[in-house]
Every structure is written in C-alpha cells, then in structure tokens.
Image 1 (cartoon, rainbow, N blue to C red):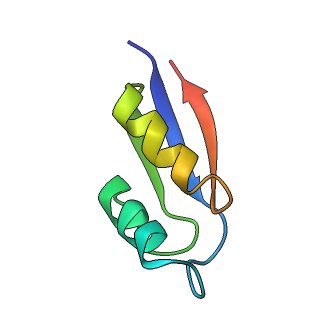
Image 2 (spheres, helix red, strand yellow):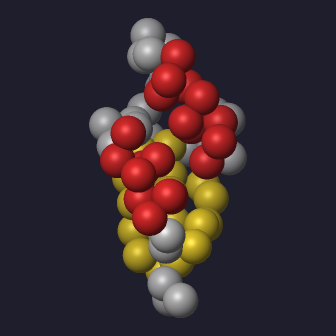
Image 3 (cartoon, rainbow, N blue to C red):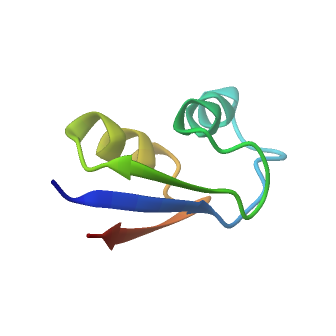
Length: 60
C-alpha cells in the first residue's frame, strides 16, 4: 500500500477553525512537522482541505 508524507509548510494562524482541526487530526502541530500516513480516501480528503498549508509526497 502506498503512503503519503505530509509536511506542514505554512502556519495555520489566521486560518479557519476547520483547517486548524484538520491539521491536528493529521497529527501536525507546528511548522515543518512531518507525518507519514497510509494513502486512503479519508486522508486524501483531509489533505485536500488544507492543501494550501501542506505539501504531500508519495513514499514507498
């Protein structure tokens, strides 16, 4: 199964509460945090919500 490496590249200050909650659900707490998650539709949807705050790479 493919995995996604999600890195928070921008601050959530000034963003909507929904976006802050989504970052927290992904496991990102502060700038430059990195998490590796399984590539599932739920995770893809969360990343899509905060796409302006994170970068995503596929990891094998």
